[in-house]
Every structure is written in structure tokens, then in C-alpha cells.
Length: 119
Image 1 (cartoon, one colour):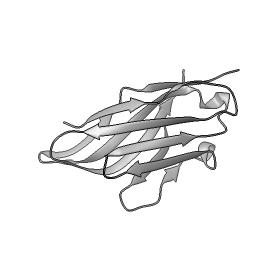
Image 2 (image 1 turned 90 degrees about the vertical axis):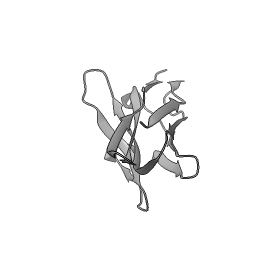
Image 3 (image 1 turned 30 degrees about the vertical axis):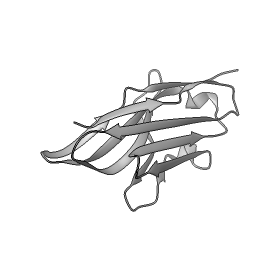
């Protein structure tokens, strides 16, 4: 079983920045994709950004140019640097990791971290 631990959410004013991190741990697993999704009240969960091993990152149009996803392969950790935050970015942010274990494919979700953008 692959476990994820998220950190870095909080309250920030419009125009501010936050950095989220998500560390994956377990035994005998490989990672293919690490990414971030978010869910705002009354809305469906949506992909924010993801990075597939060996490929360039993908971003939702709404965050392009403001958010940067990066991955530390040695630490099995993914980061989301969020700049120029606005109130529409307020949501619970979830880390998502997909890959393989000895028993087959897996998809794990983090516990979620609240990001609130408000003046």
C-alpha cells in the first residue's frame, strides 16, 4: 500500500503564494504519475497539475503561468508552487499518485489540504 502525506495548505491573501508538498511511502512500489487535484465547495474534483515520469508537466488552463509542479524522484515527493493566487483557487487540494506494486497497479490519494484565498 502506498501512503501519501500532504502539507503546506493554509490561508493566504489574493496575489499571495503557497507551496504544497506530498510525500509517497511504502514498500515495493514504482511511481508513474504524481499530481494534484482540487475540489471547491459545490464543484467536482478537477485536475490541477500532474507530472508523468519522463514527460513534461500538464496543467489546467486556469493555473497555467501561475502554478508550477515539480517532482523529487529521490524522495518520491511532488510539490506544487502556487503564485498569484486568487479566490477561485480556494479548494481542498488532493495529491494523487499512480503506479505499480508487486500485486498490480495502484492509485492513491492524499488526505487533502485546505487552501483558502481571502482578504
